[in-house]
Amino acid sequence: MKTNLKTILTTSFAIFLLAVTTAFSQSQRKPASLGREEYIEVEKNVKLHVTDLGEGKPVVLIHGWPLSDAMYEYQYAELIQKGYRVIGITLRGFGLSDKPGGAYNYDVYADDIKVILDKLKIEDATIGGFSMGGATVIHYVAKYNAAHVSKLALFGAAAPLWTKRADFNYGFWTKEDVNGLIALNNTNRPQLFENFGKIFPANETSVSAGQGAWLGTIQAQASPYAMAESMKALRDTDLREDLKKIKIPTLILHGTQDKICSYELAEQMHKSITNSTLVPFEKSGHALFIEELPRFNAELIKFIK
Image 1 (cartoon, rainbow, N blue to C red):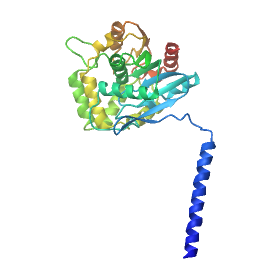
Image 2 (spheres, one colour; image 1 turned 135 degrees about the horizontal axis):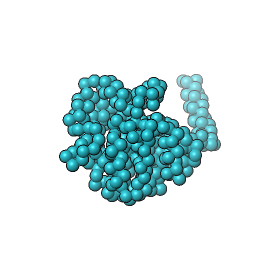
Image 3 (cartoon, rainbow, N blue to C red; image 1 turned 180 degrees about the vertical axis):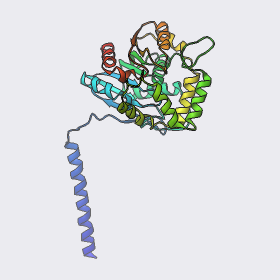
Image 4 (cartoon, helix red, strand yellow; image 1 turned 45 degrees about the vertical axis):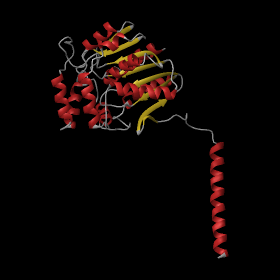
């Protein structure tokens, strides 16, 4: 009995000593990381993945459908080198973010962005968005009166409308076309990816096979449910009134050979946003962020300085 008690006491003391030593060691260690959260809760049981790297003036980037913030890999690298803090937010339902049931639309996305920028205490940022992400950041700036941000950048944005109307005969898509895309998403998603892959670049050589495979791994992480619900937002949302509310300096980068978001859309945005600059990318389709990577990064950095 005494032997057992002695063993228990010896073991307990050893565990206590190890815990104290570990705690002391950790308290004395100089942190290797910047201590920023990679997953941020935007509502109960919903956390979004956030890439938060570098130090300096903040640049917030929102991806397009059906990608994630990983699409900005080659923007992050240069922005960090040039002394900027990059904050890439992956929208709910995509990439490494949570994929809950419920609503997926620009209003929800804007609310999520607001929560994250509130929690990170971001000020005087440039916010940029690609494709559906462009439509999302337009709505964010309009809804929240440019809270936390001082400049807006739009890359191949799916705005002010992605589908034609009786009073808006621009772009390529009708509501019936998008209904077909939703049906394909729900029955043969690989085919949907393949179809969009063919029209994503300006031509067969402007995006390499390796780059296409890289983008394919990103889009495969998206929730099929989120993809379908987001397409409904793309199909139905009219942001023309939102454009009128934007007063901050706005940069519009758009491929003239874009087969997904027509260059006509960029011209309409430029007409409606009073303090905007339109920069055409003549060698690019929808994938301008990799098709003309050096120029894309240079134009963005020139704008955010």
